[in-house]
Image 1: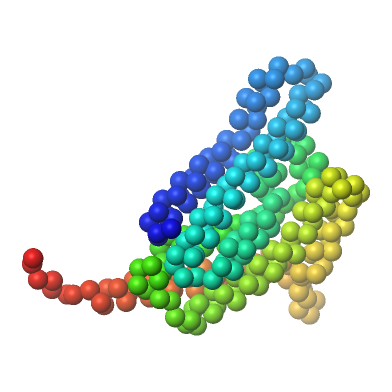
Image 2: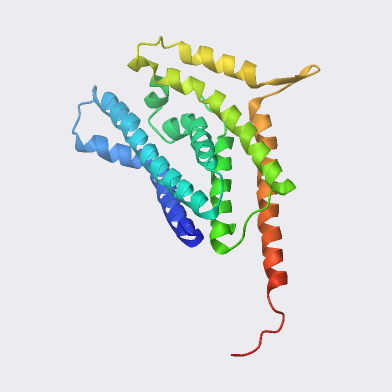
Length: 244
């Protein structure tokens, strides 16, 4: 997939997806109204529609975007490991993606009583923007393993490992399928906070703060790669092109 095609498809799919997520309460209300449910059953109908409707919406977007990312990385000469990294960045924000702008009972049924800011989702969007701008091998711009690439790779790797641990409670969120007890989600969330937190003296650094630091490094490294590439393009262009 070319850089231009990736930029068009990813921006259209993302804009449409954000619009559907933001307007999901209205879509859910309209869907429940079409069932003509009774007053004592509308809550159950809204729960079913809200849960499975959001899962389908997120799943379709995830499959489409990950397909685009895999094809663009292959065309640009980037490692295939960027695709599973993008998968984990998305999965780590499962609480917001499933329970945000949704019927309150959906989060309750999944054990998601609260959620934090989806920092990993910013990793995902930052990488999409980078792929839409950065020129790869398909445009005769082979990327050397510079210090900026190393910073981007290390920050992406560490954030991916944190995302993998964050995804553990998601297994318990759907544990009712295999018969896990409802309280297992909360237990796993406390365990996750303990594993990922760092202690400096009497102070604790939570995994959210760690992700913000990694995001700053990641975005700065990718931004420097794009800017340095554009500067190199400007120096390679003739200053006074001859008329044809």
